[in-house]
Amino acid sequence: MKLYSYLARKRWPVTYEGKILLVSFIGVHVPMFGAVSYALIADPTPIMAQLDVLAAMLLATLLGTGATLFVMHSLLSPVRTASKAAQAYLKDRTLPRLPVSYEDEAGILMSSLQECIIRLDSSIASATYQYEQLEREHSEKFNMLSGMKHDFRTPLTHILGFSALLQSSSNSMAQDPQTKAFVKKISASGEALLQTLNSVLEMSDVESRRQIEEDSELCNLTEIVNKAIDLEHLHSEKAGVSVAMDTPGHQEVFLIRSAAETLVSTMLHAATCAASDGGSIEIRTGEGADGVRITVHSNVGQFQLEDVPQNLAYQLTDLESNSGTIGRLSEASTPITLRLSLIDTLAKALGGEFVITQSLSHGINLTVMIPQAGDLGVSPLGNAA
Image (cartoon, rainbow, N blue to C red; front, side):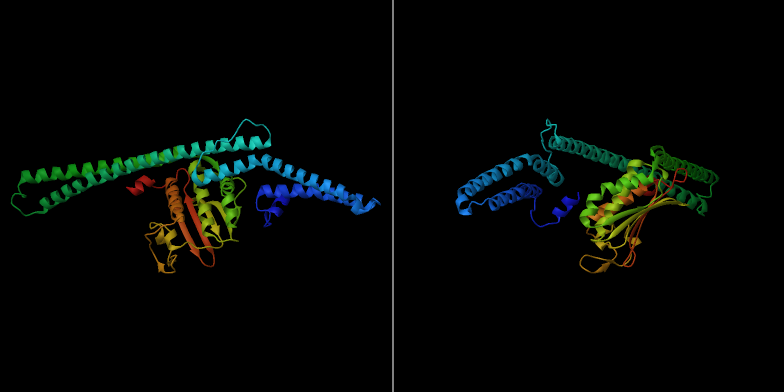
């Protein structure tokens, strides 16, 4: 990769194909011109008498060069085709139709790229469908529980309040022994029903916490962090940001693996977006009394007012907007806003908490604290309701 890196930094040739052709031209013609020059100089025959030979050699060289460059251009077409296919998918999600029957290196490149794109597209479609389905199910459960709490608690509260009012009333009807007994029955029944309802809702919260524990598994957090760095390598390289990790060699934690992988990757992506060229990011993990702690620290960069979701803006003060003004809340949003919202959602799905801190002198800290099995707090469903 050293020679390629050196040539890639040069302004010319711009394309990969141009670099191949330039190297081929120099490699073939410099030795040939050297040999011809030596033969002409060593031959006692005057140069003018050998012009016909030189002209024939020059013509043959030009024809050979043209034919060679044309053939090499054709042989490099698999590289160009694969590159265009990858760019088209990343830009417009256009599925390619690359040839997959060739068995040499270029053929394997095209067939592997075709299979990777097809698998990736299928995975994205499946993940999108599952996400939408989970979102619908979560919304339905949330609406059901919210409705239960409102539809039952509010009328019961009114009934209990009305019975208390009747019991304290000096009205002659309210002082009637039969009325008093009836009001006491209403009050007792209402309190019993309210207690039953609270028990049902508490059982729902416990069930939600149990589901988190059932979906969790023992994972190596260091491995998850390494995978996130690999996934974000392209983005960090383009942003000119270096990424390092400060984690134990092997750290077993009890988490929902898929959610944890997406969480760490999104945290790293958000920090990279906020960091400037030449910055450095460090991912730290550890365990404490509050459970597992994952911190992504960027030594430079600041979130703008528009970057921070409204439900997280209370954690930061004096946020500067893109226009240079200072504020607390913004109606606008950026791609970073969506990533920070996703981090917060994933942290809650894992039963944890997401905290943002930043300063001009210390940069940005994105921290997620996740309780371990047996210490899970109230589920996100219970919190929302």
